[in-house]
Structures are given as C-alpha cells and as structure tokens.
Image (cartoon, rainbow, N blue to C red; front, side, top):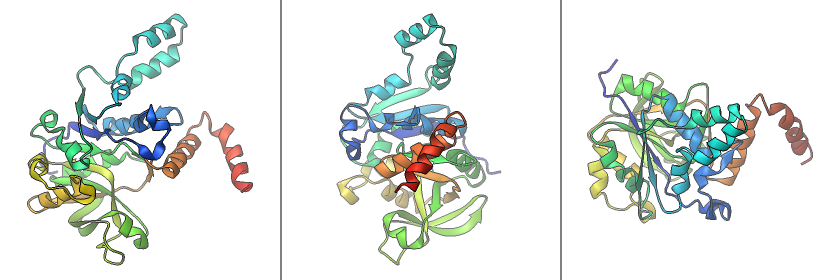
Length: 294
C-alpha cells in the first residue's frame, strides 16, 4: 500500500441556481429536492461519510441558507417530537446531524464555474488531499463510489477521478479520459478531453462527478483563465496538474442519477423507492401498470 495522506475533507459545490427545475427552485435549493424522503444532498453526504470523510465543506451562494439549517439542530421541531413521544423521528434526525465542528460553509459570490467553486474552499481545505462531490449526482451500487475511490487512492496516491462507461457513440457528450495501465479497480489516466468531437474520443470512460485531488490544484485554479462557458473549469485545472502528478481513474460499476436533470431526478426516485423494503410493495404494482398503459 502506498504511503499517502488520509482524505479527511470533502467539498460540495452547492452554489448553482438550479434553473432546470424552475419554478420549484425559485424558493427551494435544487440540492434540497427530495428523492423519496431525503434531500439529494443527504445522499451525497452519506456517501462521503461512508468513505471516512471527517469534515464537510459546502461552497454555497445566495438563497442556500436552508442547506446550512438542514445540517443543524432544529430546536422547535425536536422539542415538539419529544412532547409527542416521536422516538423514531427523533432518532432519524439525530442520525443525520453532523458532529459539532465538522461542517464548514463558504460563499462563491459569483457563478464563475466549478473550478472557481473548488478554489473558494482553499483556506478550509488547507494543504492536504481532499474530495469533491458534485451534489447533483447520486450513486447507487454495492460499494459507495467515493469509498471505492479512497481504496484506490490508498494504492495509487496522486489524484483519483471516478469514471463510468458510456456507449462509444455518446462519448462526445462527456468529459472523457484516456486509459493507461491497470491499478486495482481502475487504471492510470493518460489524458482528459472535455466533450471530444464525435469519433475522436480516447475511450468511452466518462467523468461522473467524483474527485480526489491534491492541494496543488488550488494554485493552478488561482491563476487559471476562463474556459468553456466563460467559466473557470475544473477539468482545465486537472489537465494542468496532470503534467506533474499522476491521475488514476476509479471504474465505478453502479448506477449514477443526474438529479440536476428532470429525467435523472425522476429515475432516481423510482430506483431508490424500489430499493426500499418499506415502500416497494405499494409502488411497484402501480409503476408497472403505468408503464403497461403507455
């Protein structure tokens, strides 16, 4: 096993406006939309905690205070639950409450891209490796995606990006990586191409929204010029870092749902509902009837 520094902190860029879900996101942050009975951000935080993350860093924006409130004690609600002897509900709330001092919130004052959002967390992260989890993407698999990445990182060191396979004719829609020598449940990354022209992709492995990065990325992002969409792109920063540090790709073999898109959000609700023993029996039949009636 490679001697590497532990990944203790995870960054969650939650400053996005969620315009694809208007009018719902006019008043409710997209990260707080629920998949079954938990907000999307809770699934992502649970994944981080399963992987051994000790400190949660949220990069927020205006209108996102409800996320901070969600990860805090709600005194009036808990008092009411105690008075009504709602023990199960109290236990549920206690289970999602982070320990005191293990969450931090910082602002991204302007929407300057994912790379800029990550850079905004630099002083909280400090000089140590860290994870980045895109809050729109929730994963479902036998092992958590970030947990698998941490396992690979302990073997490879350097930087780790989670990747999945797509149909080769769809590679032009994603950020694609080049495949090198095998390492554990992944491989060395030889290159990264953002939405390659059709027929030119180096592989069909696409980046799915999970990263473990070394702190040197912050210096790169600090002076990086704007790229696609006139924004500071994280991929551009990683390409620069690839010149001096190793990147490995962790091959995630599960399902990923993009809850920043309506179809992904609906599919996530169906998939997670069917995985729940307490409600599958009441939704499976009606879902089948709906599909049969199309």
